[in-house]
Amino acid sequence: MCLNEHIKNSEILMENKKIYNLKQIQFACVIGSPFVAGILISHNYSKFGESKKGVLWILICTVWTLALFGLAMLIPENITSPGLVIPLINGAIIHLFVKRFQGERISEHFENKGEKSSNWLPVGLTVLVVALIFIPVILLDRISNVNDYLRADFNGNGVFYNHEMTIEEVNKLGNILIRTDYFNSENLTEVVFEDCDSVIDLKLVTDKDYFNNTEYLNEMQSVFKHISCYDFSKPVRFNFMDEYLKTEKRIILNQSDSIQYLMESVPFVQNKNFRLFYDIMIPENERLKLQDLILRLKNLFPHQYQINFMYEIVDDSYMLSLYVPKVDWNKPQIMTDSRLLKSRLNQADFNKPFRLRLYEHTETNYEEYEIK
Image (cartoon, rainbow, N blue to C red; front, top):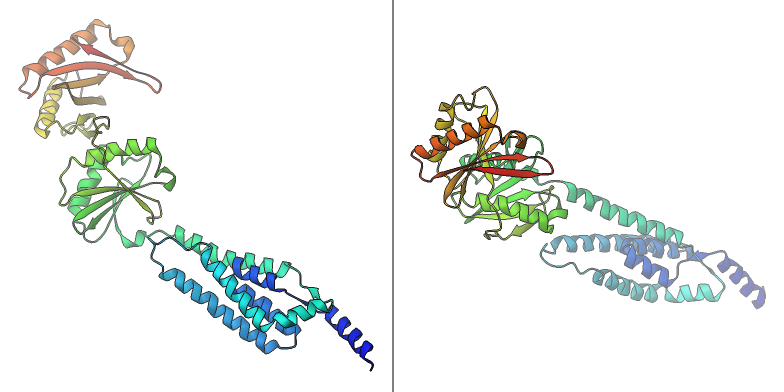
């Protein structure tokens, strides 16, 4: 066979082979992983008639990829991820190896009119690998740490707590949250109450989107400020926590006067139809005294009716507020009964003088009228 025929046959042979060039392999390593690059390198070796080397490179790149995952697992959570640094380093390394072991053959292939393999395989493999990496990560992120805690139920709401917390403290917190209506049957929610050596962490479970919501934060500051008035075995720190019990944000307690305490509510001890909403700064004996006085006024407050009483401290006085529709405020009997109630309250032995007001509260409006 003459030289020209040999060259012609070689060109025909190379034209029938499709391999990956250096840029394709490097790109696959950076975007996909060393594993994807290893498959492309193996493909080239198979076209060169060296399949055993191709298998070896798949093994090498598989170990390389697994080593990267292991390294990622060892990086502490509080250290910022290297981002693109590691993939770019991978790309630089694979460039050196491919140029060293396949560079001449790749160049010779294209010089002899050889064709480049399609990008569909590296793209498809890259998408597959990325999916295999991120889908488990997303699923793991959605798996709650709930099994790390015990759970106490409060009318369907929950307090998650660790083994170091006493059930007495858990019940104390749960009952506070019931009295403030943070725990209610219409909007079930949960908190985490965790003993952390010298402090107790209270974590309100909420969507991460609310972590930096100013309006929500101000609303929850009232909850935190309210709970801070109670004595627990250790100082209480306040936090938000996501619903998967994985991510949290420390909240600095705002003691500003603009942050209002919450009202607590309990049914009357001797009549569950009556409910008292009260300022927690009012001593318990004063609250019980008011209940006794109200129960004695059967003509004003029939025991079979459901009635709410709001009991606050306003300008160094006690303020008792009663719901009465505005259309009734000027009725003689309402005025007479209201003045009688105010007189009885101020004749009793309370620590502060009493004021009395009527109010009407609708979805769009609030109005009140103080009895003089």
